[in-house]
Image 1 (cartoon, rainbow, N blue to C red):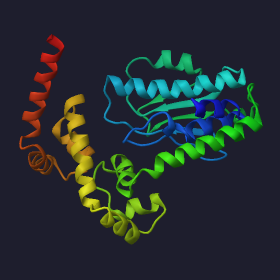
Image 2 (cartoon, rainbow, N blue to C red; image 1 turned 90 degrees about the vertical axis):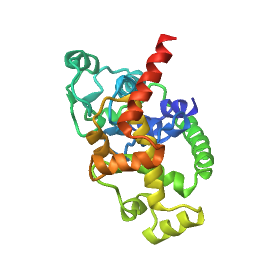
Image 3 (spheres, rainbow, N blue to C red; image 1 turned 120 degrees about the horizontal axis):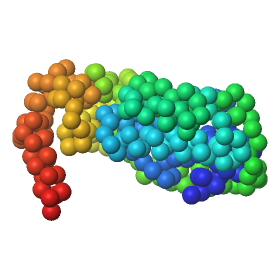
Length: 264
């Protein structure tokens, strides 16, 4: 799309990858987070999508590989990354990953990221067209602004919550600085939208809990931790309030429905 064209036209590889990451929202959106790459750095990071299932493995693999292949294409060089870090544990394909990325690949890392080899960020793009790059960046920025203009403050908060829930629920003071506003301002804006911070945490937990039960084999204790509950009893109490059924019983129902769907 337009973001890819803008990235390819960038004068330098680092700027190209940063552009691709910056405007990722134009092509996809996930409530778990957004990818990031700070100015003048060699690290591009994809957000956490724990817990992992077959689909999530594929998402991380394909995104990191796409970034690397993009850099190879615009620079004409094969060895463009110094290391690759992947947060899920090894699945026995370490050697294959290392061969493809042509660098060490670290599984069970603290995040999903690639680190460019020193100097790669300064390499000229083979498709560099600086004037076109600036023109397309402007168009991407306007399109991104139009998308975000439709977001409420509650939408912006809910986008940040999933990655902050693990272990314990975040507080208002954790979120406000990430949005560039004071806690009392965030509280006022949410109230103006007829919602509150605790309500948004509850809604986010409800959505994620159903995903975890339906898509993973995680224990209820693990799910409780991922959702920031004090323990399984608190999670089960909340789940009964949401769905009028225990999470264990609901998981069995969901599994039966999936089996019937496959059989059909």
